[in-house]
Amino acid sequence: MNKYIVVIIVLLVLFLGTLSFSIFILTQGDNIYSKSLQPAQSEVSKAGPSGIDKTRLSAEEQQKLMRDKIALEKQLIAEIENRPTFNEEKDSPFDHVKDSQVKVFQHKVEISLKDVTWYTIRDTNSMDPVIDAGNTALTIKPQSEDDIRRGDVAVYDSVIARDMIIHRVIEISSDTQGWYSKFKGDNLEYPDPEDVRFTQIKGVLVGIIY
Image (cartoon, rainbow, N blue to C red; front, side, top):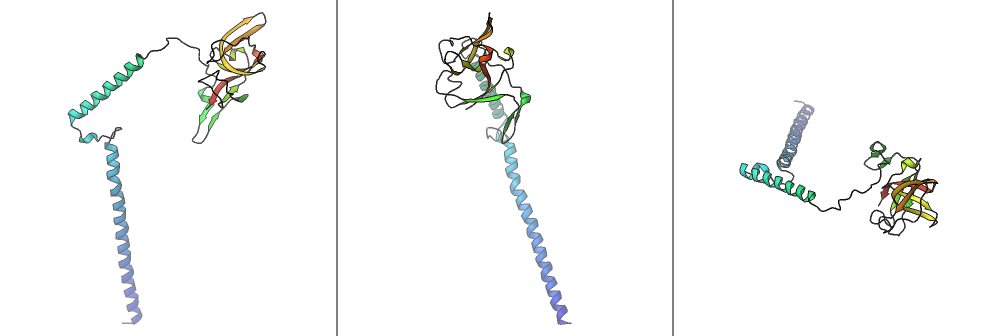
């Protein structure tokens, strides 16, 4: 036989042997990988939120666990219902921003508003604990008196203090001069001493950034 033909046959045998071994290793490797995942996945599916493997509990133990859970839920509800309150309905800010105006993404938040102004709160403590020094208050410009409600927090240009004040609206009324509102700081004992006209109000609070 020609020596070149012999060499070719030997090389071909070696190549086929190597290829078969490689296929065997790849196949075994895939099987090992998939098998190593299956136990972990099955253990996660068996374990409940508390981390207890319910498949290892007897029927009696599972029933006791459920009874304990129901008892704790009832106890929590009873504590919330019996918690002492001031039994006083207080005026809260009006819902000036609708859900449709807010879009929350993974890396940003978009709020569709017009005429937005932001203020950095000074250290006066008059609106503690809602607003304090360094907080950023976002306000929108009211278009009419109807855009201001009792319970709203708003910024107004004080004639007496000659400064911008951010307090809560506690009263809305009118006199011979027309519409006016009264303000008070949440952490103050007495209301602000002046009747605030609509033209003095610079913005109604719609958000606080802490």
